[in-house]
Length: 126
Image (cartoon, rainbow, N blue to C red; front, side, top):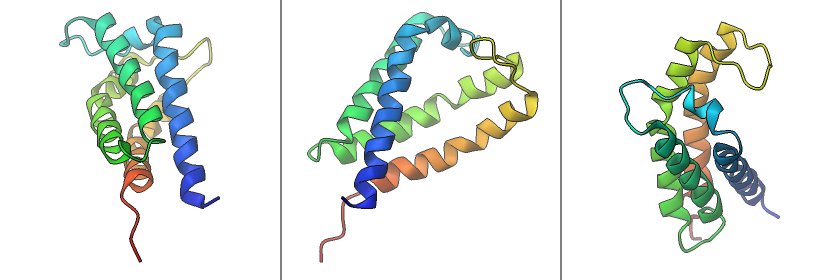
């Protein structure tokens, strides 16, 4: 199995589980919603659906590239929620989160975007 296939599967599982968690624990995500956005609960569920679909899609060659772009768009779209998480100093399920960990979380979006791009870009034909 190629290394790219392993990383693709890891990314898929991560997004499917993260999306599922939007339905299992929506209150956590509601705390992250920037106040200027309407329909917070609907947006939590919608983002969860798209995370699950993106995770499934990157495993299907026919829609892999489109799913990769979707995941990248989603990562960009949810960035304000990550900032809001820092502003509100939100902790997850009783774990104490220090502010510097929330700050460190923000630039993690960049490697996630690169990971999604690398895992879903078309293979070089030789």
